[in-house]
Amino acid sequence: MNADASNPIPTIIFFIYLSFFPLIIASRNLKHSSNSQLYDDDSITYIWPLPSEFSFGNQTLAVDPNLSLAVSGHGGGSAIVKEAFERYKLIIFKHHSKLSKFGVSYDIEKLNVIVHSANEELQLGVDESYSLLVDKRDEHSIIGEITIEANSVYGALRGLETLSQLCAFDYGTKTVQVYKAPWYIQDKPRFEYRGLLLDTSRHYLPIDIIKQVIESMSYAKLNVLHWHIIDEESFPLEVPTYPNLWKGAYTKWERYTMEDASEVVNFAKMRGINVMAEVDVPGHAKSWGVGYPDLWPSPSCKEPLDVSKNFTFNVISGILADMRKVFPFKLFHLGGDEVHTDCWTSTPSVKQWLQDHNMTGNDAYQYFVLRAQKIAASLKWTPVNWEETFNTFPTKLNPQTIVHNWLGSGVCPKAVAKGFRCIFSNQGVWYLDHLDVPWSTVYYADPLEGITDASKQKLVLGGEACMWGEKADASNVQQTTWPRAAAVAERLWSNKESASSGNTTLTALHRLEYFRCLLTRRGVQAAPVTNFYARRPPTGPGSCYEQ
Image (cartoon, rainbow, N blue to C red; front, side):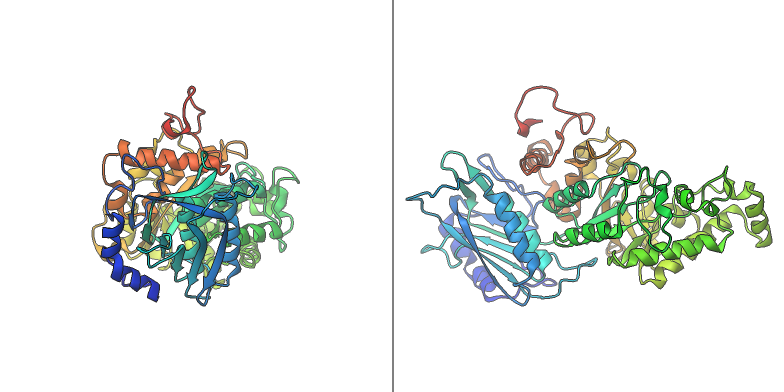
């Protein structure tokens, strides 16, 4: 087993462990696995997403409910680590009796967390690698207790999630146990961008629901919430510079203050999740004109936004400047999809402006997108645009543009061939509102499809599952999202060879069913895995693990 040279975890513990690794395997009868299934016939615990490299044994260890935390390294004292430890203790020891257990001997009593960097900035490409060692102290073990080691606090968070999945409550002994110990896991993500889009314009989602989605994302090691906060149907966000904009909300109770947005961003950061906001222009913006009718080309033709007025771009500048104060992520989504220019070419005042500037409707579309990109760039944001912008005027786009694929396959290969970065969200496989797409189709889709050149593969940042909200609200958004979003999560985190090895039915399906039940145990309303239509309830009585 080789440590990743580009992401070393340089402590004496790690190297000592590697030095004694063959001896430990021999003495413990460990099974080493890098590109094989995580479980065998007698397995009880599965991990989702599958780690890069791991080894395990055949022992069962009891974990002390008073598990203590010992931190070290420059980032060990981070509040992010300490708060995560408390969260995961509540998850791991949820069923443990509060009564004292006299005579119970615990094998594991302490968790050591080593974080080398004190830098807590959360941006694209942050180091999320970690190593995890689980063993009890005895004559065979040089490593006592549990050790998580990471270069960043966010790697430590991923290690804590993996640890929580190794722990299971035994109803017979009423203790938390780790099966198949000792464990050694060396893990890192395959892609740096692993996203979930959440649409709060088609249906308003209360802040608590958004937080629940973010919490569930952390269980699958997703790391970007793409907040599609505004669209043509409603404008729920407060914009202090233009306070009438949120008159476009459905009601005065279905709104987000700037403080709400900041709360979401901070909640997500504590779980290692970036929040990328989207302001989709020039189409999908009819709701803007409720508060400012001058943004409409005419009262009878309300989108795209009026390209002929400087006021339109002043409003965009004001929105982005206000949002920049609460959204620190360096990526900002400017939309740019499904722009129908008939409204411009048929409205007399806009039509005259087009003629005066010698523009067609498509020329004006390009002009609008590029001007919006300049506004975003002036605020030190990297623009992300839906693929229509690339499909229509690729040579004119800001070279830093990230192309967001959605219409179908083949776009990312074209984008990276021209030097652009790309995010994969092919609607045929990763649009979660398409309820007839089975888990296996989601699972086996790959962002690198059609890209064989290693240098071009690096331009694919990752991918994103999209939870569009036309038919999803607070009552069903979680069961529409999960468990299929978990299939996306493993494709984006795990080595493709490791995650896809073996027979689909016997490996990935059973592991996904187990993870779905883990989600439900944690309070996430995840739907059965194999229903023909996603989010449907069970068809009859049965175990959670066989639905």
